[in-house]
Image 1 (cartoon, rainbow, N blue to C red):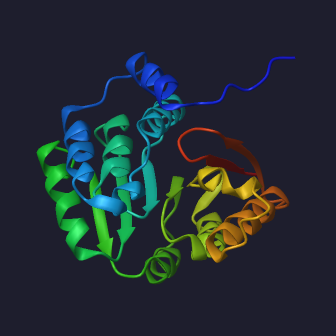
Image 2 (image 1 turned 90 degrees about the vertical axis):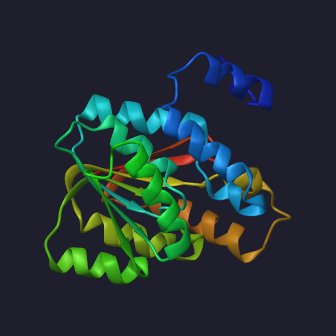
Length: 218
């Protein structure tokens, strides 16, 4: 039986060098984020950009909800993978980073496909449910404390066969470190167990970036 390879920086670079090439504006966002200091870790990994791209292309997804915009890399990556009639709604409460993201969307000529909503995500999710909105894919990459709520609310916004993809579920590998008992690590562990025991979906954790949990609604 083969064993899983440990992904170090050299292997990650090799993967990126031998995978899909990023759009010039995606590269610009990554370069911009490099200058943001500690918060640049909120950006998704390049391998995750490629993974989302292929999932959307293969599934011919046209309607996406994103929870957590940051400076727009994940939203842009997903929008570029959609056809011209696709639609993506991205939720965030940070007006400053949203302005940055909107500029990148416009520069990439994707602003016609992407709508951002600036207010607490839980309020936006409630409003979308009341409006009977439905999505084919929900991507969650926001405050970890509310992951379980975001997941449950997202299930109300997709039909059978719809996907929910959640970032950071391996939490830098700390989910398996029994000495780590801080609140965020505990939240992620509890969330992963909750999803794994949820009979409403089937799920798989993929070791891409900081870990993606891919859930399909049954």
